[in-house]
Length: 520
Image 1 (cartoon, helix red, strand yellow):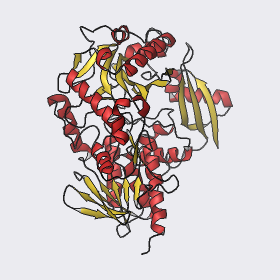
Image 2 (cartoon, one colour):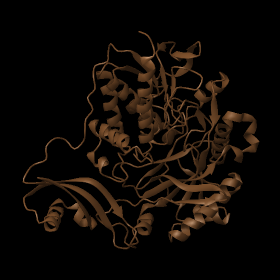
Image 3 (spheres, rainbow, N blue to C red):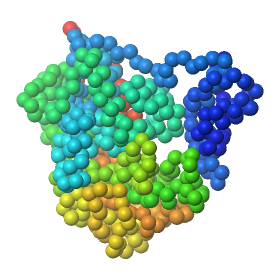
Image 4 (tube, rainbow, N blue to C red):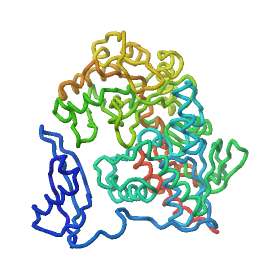
């Protein structure tokens, strides 16, 4: 017999399988419980006594059969019609997998290196302050999420699509725990192997994956995209799913130059805020002793409105590290990541302010590229104020709010190093004023959060694409070019790993419909 049950238990009880079986037996009156599977797990830390909410599947007098996740069957598409997928981030990889399901042969084009080789170039950013413009935290197999955390959060309401994405991750090596956790997370130490398995799946099914191959131009005939030209001199032919990520600025410049319709899109910009994890644990778990033995590193999520714009935490990384995410010269950009164990001494989060095109009158002449130009300016200012290398400008949190210089800085996880800098002085006033007010508000709601033990590290600008590549809502095709399917975060239609993967699947399905209208 199989039953489902919802329980509210103490963290120590949730962590011990035998204790959990005893509680279930007492609650249900059932004996002979052979196994328990956790379907959903969440932590309720609203009160001083912390509870874990569990939805369980209970196996009584029988053993569980089958695996914990649902697999997708992939066919051999080596002789099928080709589809060009530009970009091997989550949008591109999941587009490729869905194409295989639908009977098409994906040809994946990735400007960066494979996920393992890419790691060597990322190490050079911290060690030697050298940024490879084609292989970094933003470019390479797996996209920006591969080495910047691997969180699987999404605001998408398409629960079925989300569940499928998570199951596919499990099928390719992720822990089944992501199916039950409220905030699923693979971790930067585990995600590369999962990405490799996805790539191997694509190749085994007859698809192609080309690394260090950058799309330089679209091949267009009679307002229809029929392929791409690359930096290798080789051209590839077929309809194109364009999933280049939010940092492929050369693509935006190319589209703008070719007068292919795009538009400026609002972003969020600010800083990365780093606290000692122990302090965040004490605040979030209402306990001066911290999280104890059974609770995970605490997370937080803050949002408020200041003068008509949102101020909020973004990509919170408990037990994580701040990392250098520049993708070119004369840039300092920071992001955050957490390993699967979330076991570092620090917690960090983006703290950003909503920025709209109308907030930037001085960039109005750049029209569609206004927000992109603003990003570039902020990143160059951070580079200049960080010592003109990957050292990042930084300021203690309370000093920033009080508009005071920080003459020393706390220890940080940011390996390239920090340089004390008056962020309150050189960041745009419409950002700093809102951040100050936001920090005061968050400090009132969470006593101890506003502190000089925390440090602001500049700048956080790559929260989303500054450009939207315009497409039809129904067909996902570009509004003026047939055969071009703007996809994922870089096209302005997603905001993270899961939503980009969902959009990749949607674009693959749109290509299938498109091919139906093309004669053999």
